[in-house]
Length: 281
Image 1 (tube, rainbow, N blue to C red):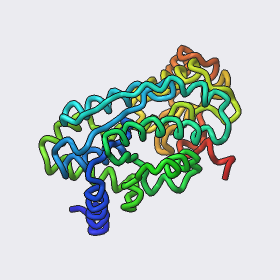
Image 2 (tube, rainbow, N blue to C red):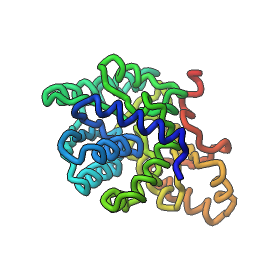
Image 3 (tube, helix red, strand yellow):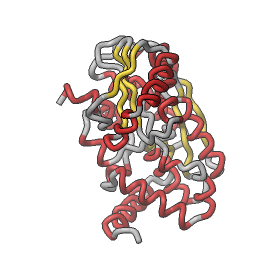
Image 4 (cartoon, one colour):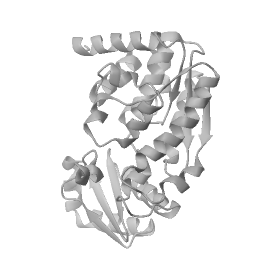
């Protein structure tokens, strides 16, 4: 049974979205924006909700496919917007890289939303506010709505609500047959490269390949930080013990090298959100 506190937050979310009239969701392919899209679709079941997904070298192809598949299964209008031009904006990788990137992307999406008279909304949630998020400043400046955050929803609550919706509705359950709520979040691949280190398409591809390799090995959450020739692997603290096996380490080591790195290293602290931002705090 859903907790009363979560029920109240979902009521608030419904009130917020109802006030929009119609909404265009910036759908990344991740859980949070997908939940926002499904929640709105479940409210209206018509064309008052649609989605746009940005596609470029700093975004994992998997997430673009997840977004397209989800919308196709629910019959939601969805368009992919190519943003390859972002490389010229983010390649120098300054500490406010995310701000410049989000400003460029959301300016483009906002123009499209304004053209059809829709409110542009993103999947920012309450937990996102605890990390260094220069990109959110761009979201605020452009007047993009963040209804999940405004309703006070956390990541854990979003996943709980997503599961509840799937259990209650066979259409939603079918659309989520690929276990969207359990899939790991890729986030922007540029976030794997330390600030000040130049971002290239080759580095982004190496990170994506390495993370895909580790997910194929069964890790539910993983990050591969790009430190030149070294791939620094972060997995959940409870998953670190898998590397105690010598044969497993050898297999991962060889796989990481094939992705374009010379060395593979395990971060002994394990995965934690905003790891690369800790020097900014």
